[in-house]
Image (tube, rainbow, N blue to C red; front, side):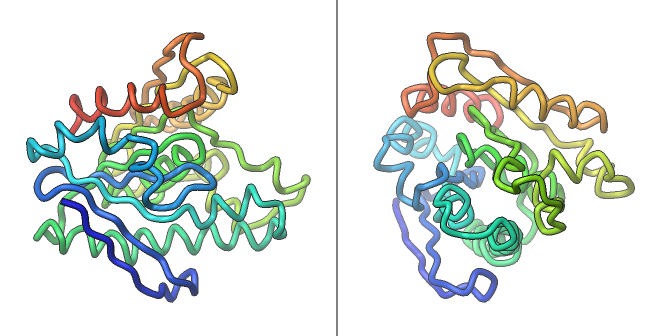
Length: 241
C-alpha cells in the first residue's frame, strides 16, 4: 500500500522523495508542516485515521518533504533565498510531482485534492491558486498564510508570486476564471497557538476575487496540533473526495 520514490530534482537541486499510500481513488497531495518530511503524516497517525478511506479505494495520499518550509523557519537563510526556494518548490510540485501522480493514477488529466496544516495549509492554498488547472479542492487546516514577517519590510518579487495573499488581488483573466470554479476550505481551531484570523484574512482576499471558499471555526477546544488535524481531515475528505 505504501511506496517511496526518490530522485534528484532539477528545480530544487537536491534529492527529493514522494511517498504514496493507497492503490485506488482520488489523489490527495498532503503537504507536511514546516519542519516535516514526507513521512511526517504517517508518524503522527494522519495516515492511520485516513486508512478507512484509503482501504475503501476512495483516496490515494501523496506527500513530499517540506523543503521551503524548513528554510523559512530555520532562520539560517536570507529572505531572497527562501522566496526563491518557495517558487522552486512550487515548480517541483507542478512540473515533477503532478506528472508522477497522474502517471500513477493512469490519467493525464485527473484532478488532485491538495491539503495540509499550518505552513502545509499555505502550500495547499498556494498550489490551487497557482495551478487551478491541476488542483480542484484545497483543505487547508489551521493555516499560516502571511509569511511576509520573514521579509523584514522588503519587497521581493519571488515572494510576491509565491504568496496568494499578495498576488491574488492583481489576478485576472483565464486563470482567475478557472480558480473561480475551485473550492478552498479553511477549518481552524481557536485554542492554543491557533490564529483563525489568518484564515479569515485569506478568505477576504479569495472572496474579493469571487473564488469559492469557506472558513470553518472549530472552537477554542481545538488547538494547533495533530489531535485537531486527525479529527478534521477525514471529515473533509469523506465529503469532498
